[in-house]
Image (tube, rainbow, N blue to C red):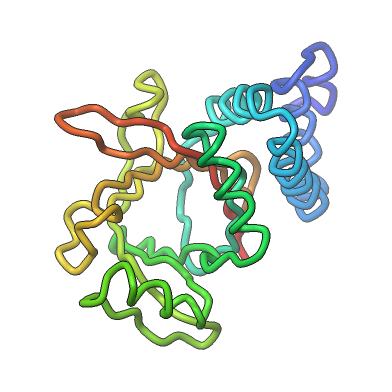
Length: 215
């Protein structure tokens, strides 16, 4: 890949291409820069949700399904895309307390689970009193999933990694089994995801974006 291939392209695509070009010689610095970009998008969403949503969507569509994603990742809730009042409430709560820490993947069998803060069991017991999180070295593990690659529900012309909670019987039926995450790799070790809510039949509504980074 040519080192100047992104110079003639502007906007999100050009910026991403320049990062990918730089990754050939500076993979760690490139991952840091991509993560900083996504972190800035999360901050910008508080004052300009519409343009941030559009940029996240464009960036997502330029991604590719992850290959060989394995082990723990750190997570960031970039933004929610429900309605202004609910999005503001989510930002306020997340600013004070964020129980979700990321995900852990097992590439060998296409499964994984979410990494949660140790104190997240308090809220979990209120919402799902019959559901038990599992202990881990750095907190809790919960909400198991299966992974596979197929066309996206929000982007049927793109291949994505699906993070599927629906077929795991141990997952709570309330909310969790209606969530479908879709994930793409932006640059090596940095990933952007869409959170979709299954609202019946084959209808899915986008309710937010998240990002992951491998340890």
